Length: 443
Image 1 (cartoon, one colour):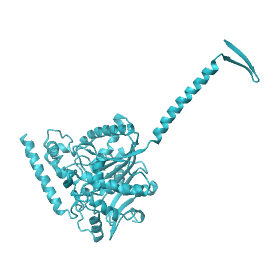
Image 2 (cartoon, helix red, strand yellow; image 1 turned 120 degrees about the horizontal axis):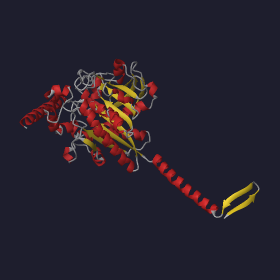
Image 3 (spheres, rainbow, N blue to C red; image 1 turned 60 degrees about the vertical axis):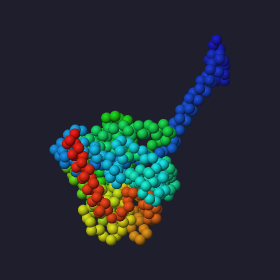
Image 4 (cartoon, rainbow, N blue to C red; image 1 turned 30 degrees about the vertical axis):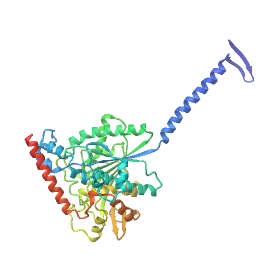
């Protein structure tokens, strides 16, 4: 029954019992808002997990000569000699032993193995642990990252590492196809990370054409539209090509760091899988009248004792490869640097490089160099202004901690002089290649 009540403010209509019902609705609404508010708060405040994925480049490029015309026209098929030989050699122990390469697909680096390796002072094979270069190189990368995190008072224990392997064929068409699989695997990894209560921070480190595979994730995003976000892309010796360069502008990529050396004659010489290749985004933009979003992409030249021609293409990703650039007569100061950092690949220093760069305002880093400097009991990484060579910043002396890290590298890096080991490796690869060719012909 409707009742009418007089108040000082006039008449108020209400239904009998409506007050208690309204009060109940208010309580329910408060509980719902509180629940979803807490869920949103939990999502925003969930701890981050740093996920770093390493992607190798083209493998055993010389095998492309088995089908040169098909390689040039991007029509390599599984039945072709090039494809079959590469598949036969893909798991060769030398390839897995001397570089940051594991089997195909997304492969997690077991944190327990990294921990065990970090405690060893001898070769890994003798201990029964995996004798694969990826474990040693990524372990060194992780230890350098931990040094920086400790200095910055950041969490050093919440990182996961992976490799992504593919067939390694010298073909843009194959890389484009592989990017779809890579995209799918990354999104599955992100979903697992979120289910575990973490917010993923994705860093992708690509070598040579592995960098173009990373850029092609933007192509996959345009197809699948899963809103993939990559925090940092780190490129070493990646051929900057018209087919992929503009993908750097895609909003899925937060920052891109392109490291190059003027001693790398391979990076800008790929005429099979691209019409033209360059060392930097700056170069390709000037030649082809392209535009890259400002303050997003960094071109960083790598120097050794202020010499821009010391590092060759293989030094970024392989052990004992600091003597493969076109300049072999190094100065004493450059030789001291190489002796100090060998046998580890240059890519393991990426956490130090990025730490130096990220300390500064992007607009002030238009033309920059990273320089290795070594003296007796000293190893520093310097951030230099490209033209004047004026020092912008530098790391602490890492000679002592890095000497300890080198001990952990084990079997891939027993020598600092690599001429004899390089020759042996080349001969073994050629021998394995000939065997694979014969086998494919017989089949």
